[in-house]
Image 1 (cartoon, rainbow, N blue to C red):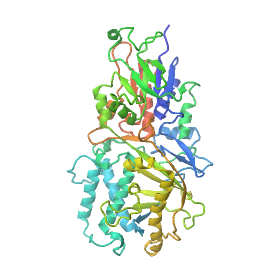
Image 2 (tube, one colour; image 1 turned 180 degrees about the vertical axis):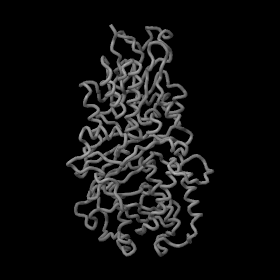
Image 3 (cartoon, rainbow, N blue to C red; image 1 turned 120 degrees about the vertical axis):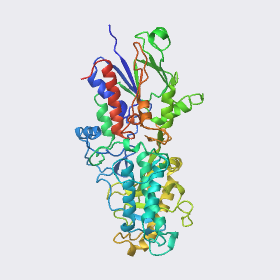
Image 4 (cartoon, rainbow, N blue to C red; image 1 turned 135 degrees about the horizontal axis):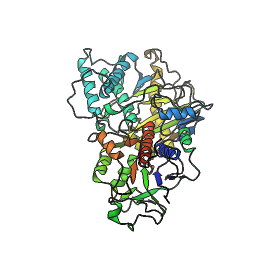
Length: 530
């Protein structure tokens, strides 16, 4: 009798559930199991509610609807619209008000050229623009952007010693304002890419990153509805929650070399891979698809010789050097979201404006000492849709890590202080706002906060991957390669997840495509391709 192949998928995020969905639909006689260390499915997709609105703690946007499998699933499951208000339900807010520290509202004639410069520079890096900059620096996006800003200043003939607000208050001059405006976009780019510092973001790899065409949308019923749709066809019992994997045993050699009684083979079919769980149980399999985040793989190889880290994912024998090298070189960052609810009795903000914040540099004498350091790389604070009283700010890198350690009370106080310092002075300068009048700007009162904490969660240890300086797209391909042997037990361990997709890393659709890729690899092996 031919026994069913047992396939274990580690991780019930979009990559793992996509692979399971595909295998279940296309491969009869399969013994399929999806093990998830947490108490929910979805991975870095997690829809929640806050202040009466539906919000996303993790993945938020369908990044381009053209060819997006996520968009297709959301349409088929009638998830794009909802009776309940949801995050970014009216798209990306336009008409932002840009305010510099000490409350100077900046005219679009100053702001827009700098924002356009940044856009042009990024389009050049991404291969979308032919304009040639004289690029002689190191191969980082951050270095290129800063050189572009310097060349912009050199090309401009206007006087750089004039003050952007018409007076000398706040230690601002035009060049400092332009640099602060440029920093808004740099900080936006940090949250888009996950890189703590754009000087660590690989310049050469940016042109490989592929964007799906069409508009970007959020999902009315929540991103988790996509996950629920993928999981809905799987038989009861296939998904097992609360099963954290701590070790995967596999075999470097073929069956004839290790012998049929080697540890790791079952009595019921000599299965070559054994999965060990933190609760002491084990599960043997013919194939294992690993979909854990890159941060978990990094922690596993970093702490492989540390007996005090028994909860980390380890491989026995250890992963090959070429794969360890790729995991080590690739970048993996932390991005967190901070939702804040405005006090219901707060006047003067109806609706609350979409604020872009220009901060002084760290060495400037004009810095307001009341503004905490972790707020100073926040690009914007804005309502999650035009009439919402829930505000949102994004944080990356060290600021995101700091956010995770702070109490709600401290966050409420320090964000309120920061916003009040910007808006109270802005109301006094309304004649210079050119139509963007902020009136009755008393202290901004926030009553509740909700934050994501991706770095401190041991199942994620961060948010998403990027190609760091010193790595390349080839490292992504190396990470995606399966561990295999000759003989009757090939394709022992396969790898999926956003960090394994060379052109769509860091996205949900990239994770989806990777799950399909690894499922198809097994289907081809068993000659089950439809």
